[in-house]
Amino acid sequence: MAEPLTIRFAKHGAAPKGVLIVLTDDTLTFGREAQKQLKPGLEGVKRAISADQFKGRLSSTLDLIAPANLDASRLVILGVGKGADLKAADYLKLGGVAFGKIPGGAREATILVDLPGLKVSPDFVAEMALGARLRSYVFDRYKTKRKEGEAEPVALTLTFLVADEAGTRRAWSAGEALADGVVLARNLVNEPSNVLDPAEFARRAQELTSVGVDVEVLGDAELAELGMGALLGVGQGSIKESRVVVMRWNGADAKTQPVAFIGKGVTFDTGGISIKPAAGMEDMKGDMGGAACVTGLMYALAARKAKVNAVGV
Image (tube, rainbow, N blue to C red):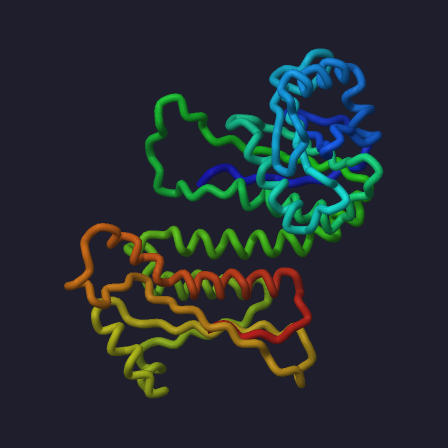
């Protein structure tokens, strides 16, 4: 798999490292901290903005390589549009856009979260970090040969410079749990069916016990005892035995009724295979996407210690 992304947080005033990403709104004004960091090369930055006719619209970018009089190897100016109108979903998108501007092979990058006349909350910074983390996802576990000129993956440390470091760390603890759950679901969907059969899916679900999820795995005998003949009938189309996984997270009072989530977990859909066209048949491995989503959700609930009782099947 590709080298992981490490996300860190530091207080305004810390020295940025590697690629520097700064924010500006549609007035093309920088925040006070950004102005301090850009001061040695600010005039050159302003000329570049003018020459490019950069408008600072939401998710627009201006990329300056080796900017004059600045220590950054690359400066990316990221537009946010009207800063006061930004919602959580906008910050999530901005985080993804920012990560997408970091060149392959970079080992360090810094996002300076600072906007003129606007205090960006820790929750919004956490949304940016989540967007970056999700954008960084790559599934290349079985990739053995790279394209000519393609950079080898390296570990990247992405640092967010923020006004409230402690508050942002607390906000990110929940965001990181959500990101890990999404990545778990994506990995399950991307695995080929000759690897992720019912038994292997169940084994990976059992790993959720590490974050406090109770996991019960039902095999053919247990399913027959429960009278689940329809499910077993479908499973007879494979030499692999069927599995049903029941996951429980109890984060609320014992008297609280649980919320239930059910996801389809057919690891390869052979139903009607005699009438289906051959093109795209490999995509039938994704028929377990519902179960992957439920597994990732149960992980996220447990990892963030959600105050809810939940059952995932």
